[in-house]
Length: 142
Image 1 (cartoon, helix red, strand yellow):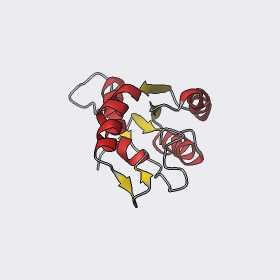
Image 2 (spheres, helix red, strand yellow; image 1 turned 90 degrees about the vertical axis):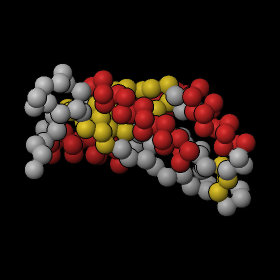
Image 3 (cartoon, helix red, strand yellow; image 1 turned 135 degrees about the vertical axis):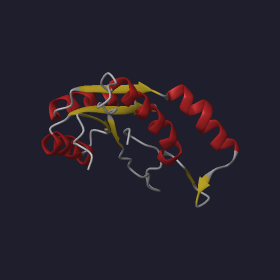
């Protein structure tokens, strides 16, 4: 069995689910939790997310600006392909998931302790909200 992690990088939205899991990880594993949030164009909505993560117990918060890459490498190709759900809704959050996951892993690589024969990299914990037909574009980072 693998020993408990010392540091976890959590995909954090500031919502109830990710706030609860942040505290649970701290209490269950006695580890440091680094909150990760992808800026896909949420603007000022991310300011309270950073504050809430710190108040909830995160040791650090990384908000990574992925807007340009998201539009260039994901949104434009999606629009060119006419990628819509049920013929009416843009794919929204789902189209961003690979980009968000890659950026989160990059943060985990930076947050990992100095490698040693017994050290393990920071754990990556993901949680993504699914988009809904009534609100297909993400308001938070998932």
